Image (cartoon, rainbow, N blue to C red):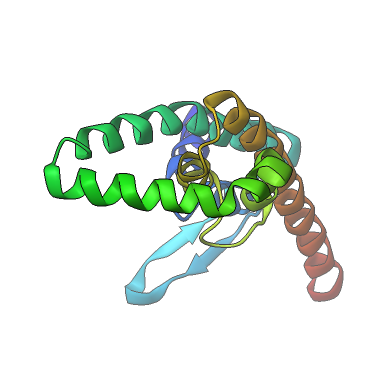
Length: 170
């Protein structure tokens, strides 16, 4: 059981997967044939446990990721060519979108994180929040709301889709 929960935690931390992959992996059971002869088996765990583990993991990721992005960018800014262009780019971008950030900043990032599609999520939400100039606190609020909404949507889709599949094909 601990190994399954650790697997869910780990998959949730992976870019492009996050809870959009870990929730179905945790809830569904059975084996899926992948290309090149690989197989993937669902864990068949309780949906509430999977939801809690995956949402917690993804929210925890945001707690670590935003400060890392900040430090990484500050290190890159010491490279003369990068620093000059980066500063110019961010100031110009922030000036253009400042009215929208003031109006939609935290909520906008929360909704972006919440969309259960590839390319959205905690990683891109953290980078977007950093570029928009949101504070760490604003990002944590947005990320927590967005991760909860995404987790609820993915869990609902997985549980209802699995139930419909069993109803019609069992």
